[in-house]
Image (cartoon, rainbow, N blue to C red; front, side, top):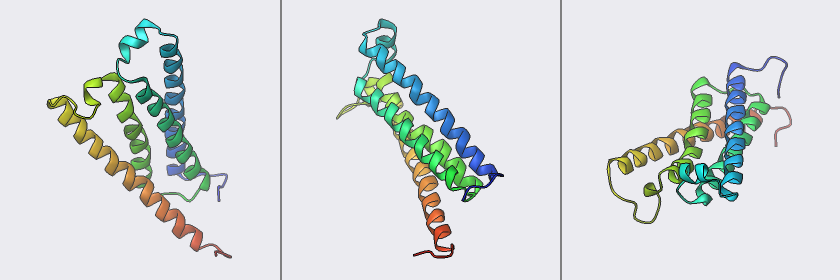
Length: 151
C-alpha cells in the first residue's frame, strides 16, 4: 500500500485530484449564484443549470477516483496517470461546455463547425478517460493478485 515516499505518478494523481476538487467547489458556488438568480452568472451560463450540476458532480467523482488510486500507492505508469488526470478534467468539462454553449446541447443540436469540434473533443475525452481509468483498474487488479493471501 502507500509508503512514505509516494511514486511520482501518485503525486501527479494527487495534484490532479486537488485541482478538479477546487473546480468542483467553484462550480458549486456558481450553482448557488444561479439559484440566487445573479445576472452575471445567468449570462455566463445560459444553458441548462442541470448541466452545471452534472459538471460539478463529475468533477467531484473524478477527484475521488484520483484520490483513491493515489492512496492505493501502486505507482502507475506515467502515461496511465496522465490519461487519468487529463481525462478526469476533459470528461467533466463536457457538461460545463454544454451549459456555457447551449447550442451544443439538445436532441438535435445546431449543426456547425463548433458542434463538430465538440464531438471530436467528446470522443478524444472518452478515449483518454477510458484508457487511463481502465488501464489503472486492470493494473490495480493485477497488483492485488500478486499479494500474499490474495483470494
